[in-house]
Amino acid sequence: MTRPATEGALRVPTGTTLGQALKVASLVGSGGEAKVLIQAGEVLVNGEVETRRGRKLESGDVVEVGDERLEVG
Image (cartoon, rainbow, N blue to C red):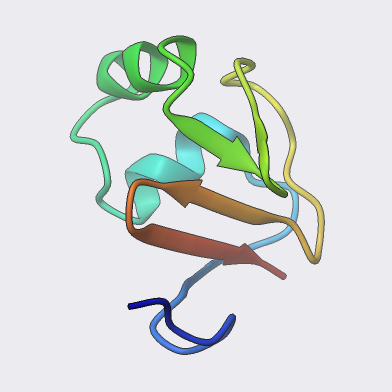
């Protein structure tokens, strides 16, 4: 079952790096875990696989990891 875009989504501030966002949202326990998850192609930003841990997220970006969704802004 899918949920509406904003229902249950976690929010992270604009300018946060992808790796930091995963840590802030408690989707990973460390930067090393974030690196592994991102490099494995398990993280989507705006529906596309993102492999750069240092990517700066912008307002309106949507990060997805499995069933978890983060919204930036």
